[in-house]
Amino acid sequence: MATVSREDFSCAAATNESAYRRVTVPVLKIEAGPGPAVALIAGVHGDEWEGQAAILDLWHQLPGILQRGTVYLLPAVNAEASLAGTRLSPADGGNLNRAFLGAPARGYTESVAAALEARLLPRIQAMVDVHSGGASLRYLPSSVITRYGDDAYDARLPALARAFGLPQCVFFRGNEAGSMPAAASRHGIVRLSAEIGGGRETSGSLVERCREGLLGCLGELGLLPARPLARDAEVRLYDLDAPAATLRAREPGVFIPDVELGQSVAARQQIGRLIEPARPDTPARVLASPQAGTVVCLRAIARSGDGDCLFQIAPALPLDSLPSRY
Image (cartoon, rainbow, N blue to C red; front, side):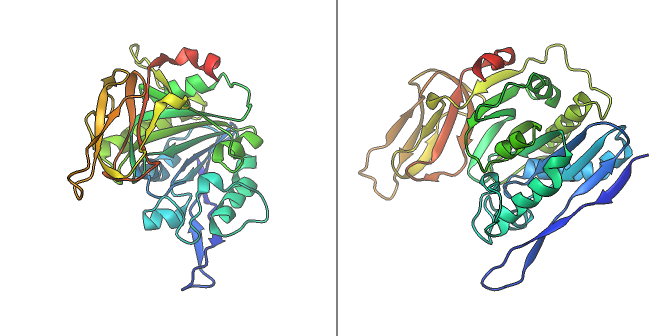
């Protein structure tokens, strides 16, 4: 029988209207005997709902089924941003995925990061950190493998991506010292992430896919019975770190996409337009695909500005090619 305890913590989140305000971050610890310790985290950005809903489901479900090891559940790790439905923390405008900067913590967001690095990360060996496109983007539901700096390749990552059960896996590289991948790297934690949905909305099917993916990872890590993979379940890898993968707006306008998530496109194919209805004499700017591949990410907000990400497009590669690209 699993043992359940609350390990919530609170951080100061002062505003002009509330000098001594604090925000509580909910944490559930579930212990089921010897085995690895794993954290399941969502809500690093408060407007990314699929992981938050899935981990909330597990908050009620997992104590009755966990067979070994320890799991920490953090359904809304940036609780203030979750309550506000915003990407960034309202108290200080901080991005929690860039706030792992060490002491002294400057404001609410860095205080949350410092608490996680002191209280949680030293205790765990693995982490699944769920994201989505938030308000501004929609992602093809994908597991995510992120390399920080010069980290060595971890052979467990493809197995975790397959266990998550989604047919897409995207790959990023990062060098931001304050990111969650950087913090996980400092503590030697194996980390899988995910990008599921977005557009300031969600659905029951996306939440279910996320929840099942998290359970699949716990099975792969030995905390639950391993789930059999479908024989035809091929996972395709998309390298979104390549410069050609991302198309950004170069001027303001209303974004009209001509393609959909998951659609295959050719290099230089017209995939959308930027128009300016308030200036009808301004010609539409045609948007061409930077390379051949699959539309993995698509902007969800029509009104766009210079520098906004409009598309991410990459060719499908075998997941087994990951070591050569890492």
